[in-house]
Image (cartoon, rainbow, N blue to C red; front, side, top):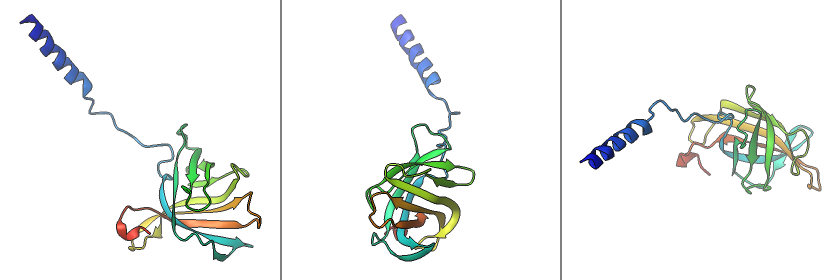
Length: 159
């Protein structure tokens, strides 16, 4: 009988200590800038869009680094455009991002995320992303403008 009483008390103590209803999962340090994005890339010349890159609509991603700080994040195209993944510097309050120079063969300038500034194909508002990108191995030294909207997950907004 003593054995069963000890087992019962152990089970009760585990059940009372394992449930913590006050723990909230929280977010990451760049939570409002992180996401999946549908974007297009256009060729820029002298500050003007002069042509399509030929990549069409593609998905790209922004997410926190392992350090989980509000001053940096990863930006990558998942192999959908030029196969880049680069750590960018972030001003979280301004929602801007950039690289200081070429990093991993890529330079990012004028990066900005604007809350609610885009309209999805279904007509709904979404966050907008835009940045300029250059590649150090581009023989023509082109600058591309990458712009688009945060992926909503709705089929009507996917390409």
